[in-house]
Image (tube, rainbow, N blue to C red; front, side, top):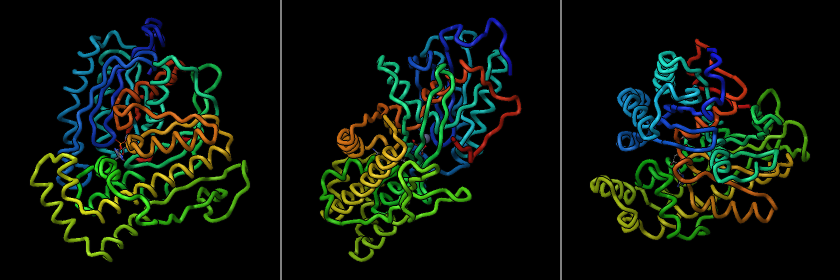
Length: 400
Ligand code: KG4
Ligand code: ZN
């Protein structure tokens, strides 16, 4: 798509409508200049998917269809802008669920076509990184020192990117230097919470209950996938690679700890208790943390605390090791798991000891939202990088 002279980038201060439908949140936001969030509307489907203990793709698409029009209208109304006021419309084109992505893409295309505005495609993972950059810019902070290392940690991803911005503020480049080889960290939180009879999504429950248990009660060991050179796109695990070697990867693995928790539950006869807890919490509808706490015995709380202690530890260790190996000067942590309180606290402490700054998004911008999509679109608007007319959903879209 092209722009006319009257629509040239930044004419209205870079007013962008962002749309995000990659998973289970239908979201729309209006952001100015990649810096000021004028409106940010999120319709969560959590209650719907909670009945199934995870996201059901067909239901997600149907809900997006139901929500997309009212959510976009609400974002425009709250921002008090009209379509003709926009400089561009941005939409997530992947990674995510194909049907869910398509709802946002088709609607964004129709809006862009109808209003004669350029359309910008945004990678969801790039969006998570820009959630942090957006808020830092809004606070008027100095740009973060480059190179910047970004840990994107959510229900679908645990990825490390080395990010750098060109001199002209327009171009960001990303290089993937690590990822999970199996489950994402958020997925491990969700599966462990389900195993213990807690609600969905599991991360917030484990976050809330972990502080009541002993984090050293169960010493979980991680099969840390050591830094190794990349061969044929695959990491070569357990090969110690020299610092700063080109192509060194810092991967994660979370399926082992999930199985270890399962074995612990079986070995200590905790299955029935977890099932009873699940029934009791379901009967309460929307249970409080104190209700869940009363339903947890000491051993369960210790298991929860130990699981979180181990997961947070490995996330921080691998990220700091990657930062050292690649000479990163600042760290950004984003995605749903970045909402975790212990992760934030220990990251600040340990990065501080290593002399690095670490930034998290506000809680509202940690989980999926469209403000981050509109913010990531801003450099693309400046660079005039617009989506092709035949742009579709790319469920496995990579970044870097
Ligand atoms: O970024 P997000 O909203 O969606 C994806 O792109 O996946 O992340 C959702 C994930 C879920 O796995 C959820 O359990 C986890 O983030 N999560 C948390 C917390 N809040 C959400 N994990 C740990 N602690 C939290 N406070
Ligand atoms: Zn996400």
